[in-house]
Length: 440
Image (cartoon, rainbow, N blue to C red; front, side, top):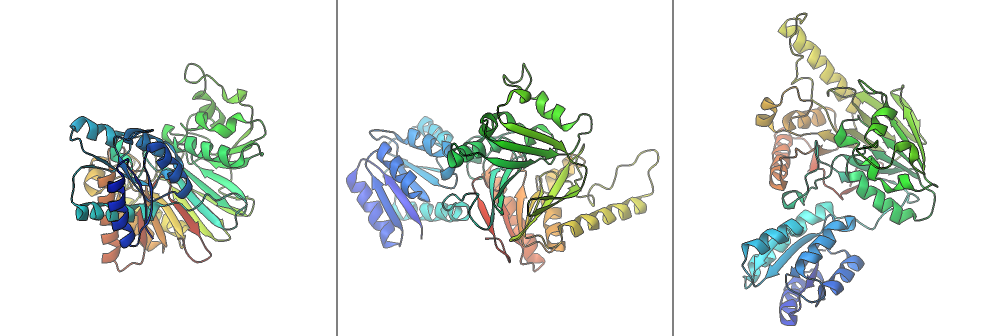
């Protein structure tokens, strides 16, 4: 059932919209001011908020900013309505986080069409009540999905603008994949969840390019003395893991050094490519990306997840020629061999999160940059028998509409191959729950 919250100081207007929505099977709440509306939003977490721009006790701009600053509303869609037609107001509302901006009066059928469309988008990303480490089962949550650099703003509200970070809960453990800027939001959520209880978690780093570690200094659990945080990764091409992580927290870049943190932080450079984290089996695999970069396959009692945030399929990048290069046929054969090895590593995984930064045209201009092309990504997932694919590491220049188009194209590719592969784009706030048979 879709749900909506209507916030407007015009009682007649609220009543008309509420009646239409309830007749269409929606669950509806309403409020006559911004402050009360936010209270109801926190209580009921509606999929849609229809909010007037000019209201007492909190205007529409304030409501948008408040909702967008709270991670529990990451999937909520906001429609701002107003009787004023100033272009500057529209721009400000969209920058504050509104998904649509409608000028009164408008046709009710048009409003209903917009609300249904936004609710369908929200349904794919809506998060159920927050899970805890003690909750049985396995689930993951996307906290950062963007590549290269954070891209906040109205054009990335749907999928999010934070860089790489995923939370995985399995067998009572908290495992974090990458420490991009999404880690800051995760830190707030964990601090709220655990309060004064000791927190233990493991952070697995794919590599130390800045978009994958820049959230670490802003991770709140690092600043609580009772917490124990283990950071695992592989030695970099030029520096050890500790040196890289501590360097970004040295003066003049940051006021608190890594050694000064009050929490119990353990940084280990991995040597093995197959190791346990409690009851979770972790397998690492070197990705095709500049420097030392890996992806991980994590096998839990409820299913498996593979995470490759940065990877360029070797069948595209057929090893540029140098003075000792073999002939083209030999190079092609080698690339195909490497591709088969990668497919076998991913064989049968339930959830695959894979670098899909470029479409075909873009990839031609970025060959050798270390990132994936959506055509290859879909083929890899199909060949490996993956159940669910999430396009990841969204290009900083891709707005929500572009990501939507890439998802549509990827699904068309799967359909042409008569594949049952499920395809989505990774979206901040999206929770994926694993069962013994499939992801939901």
